[in-house]
Image (cartoon, rainbow, N blue to C red):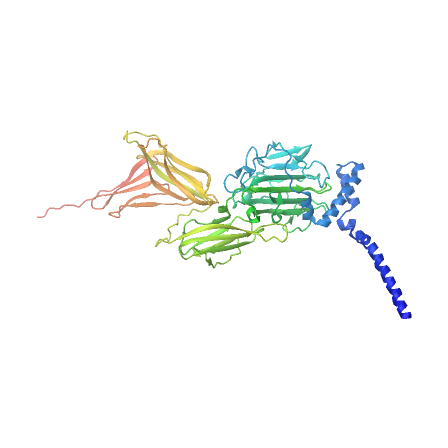
Length: 595
């Protein structure tokens, strides 16, 4: 009985303890989830001091702002920075049409995409929606006002709203301006205008630029460059910079580039001009929406946002440069005519610091050909057999989001030919960025007036133009006309040109501008050589193999004349003043009478 009663009493206590726990555990759990100021990084006195020092909030409202800030930090801690930011920066449709906006069906790659690359000299933001916030410390109320006017100041286009300099949002000519924190951009960025979103004047600002497109080609992609400058406040509500891309208003998670100011951010360097400013050097990225399920007719939005810190004492800004490229621009070959047993090099304009690469070559039968260094940003290969080959470059997308493994494939077709016994069939291959001299002689003739005299030949010229890897002309063709005096019916053409860096092919045209097709133009002695080089050419008689003329480094001729026995009798020199005889020889045999 004693043992049984003891067990019964113990059992009653256990029931009471269990009932007590069931009653109180929800309250215990509730209090356990309450985050402390330290856990969320909320330093009330520090935040209050910085708010007061900035002077943008009335003292009686400081406690209201502090409470709102704490609430934000609780949500940030629970959701994580990226999810918290995404919940606050959901894509919103523009409330009012902007005079800067265009129809949403502009292409972002291929043809007809130049209208949004910030290069229009009068309206650099045409096609883009510019928006910002206007209330200080409203860390969760973003971009409440849309910009509709642009004013020009010096080399920058500025936006001012309510007395604030909205965005330094300026297409910047970096040949005359260099950012004090990040330095000059690389060559691929320095060729076009870019936008700076935000500036280094910390007063708690948020700025955004965005653009809508319609998918009209599944191979279209967005190619952009970016650079970031963030000042580390060493407290929460830090400055940040984001790039997001949406399909039908739904964000593509693996398109996001999101950075919050902090020390030792991956990919960032401490600026040599400040102990608190961290910079992300210029990088490039590419996104093909169809790789993420976009189909024809879908709406694509690209959006760049930047924010100062939530207390207004530290700045954040960044650069953005979107470029108009085709798939042919992504894989660049160093030659267009490929012969068997001849090496060809491939490279890419994608950024090796943000992308992983993988090359694959397939033959005509779709068989994979073994290659070396397939994971590099460049590839050199020798094709041993004729045929049509497929060169694929698989590139990973750069994103700060986790668990992203989507790649995009870019393709280039290569035709390999048997060039026969000639080892140098395609040897005329000009060097990029080098200056060349072009020279020729031209003569005009009017059959209706055979004896017509000309003071100058102005209807015949040589046109030089260049084509890039996408088959698009580079700049305007250069025209070279005759100058100087007419010598023995001919006038010399001479000039210089520079081979562009992105050239794939060159066109040389001999042009007759006469509208009367009976009027003729003749060209002779055409030569192209490096400007710092020297060249002589020689003309031989095909029948006798005798030297008939020698053209010097200025393309002037020296003529050699022979008698019937093959002896040299006369040498003539062509000069700017005409042709002169510089040597003449007469010879003969003495005839004697026999006795």
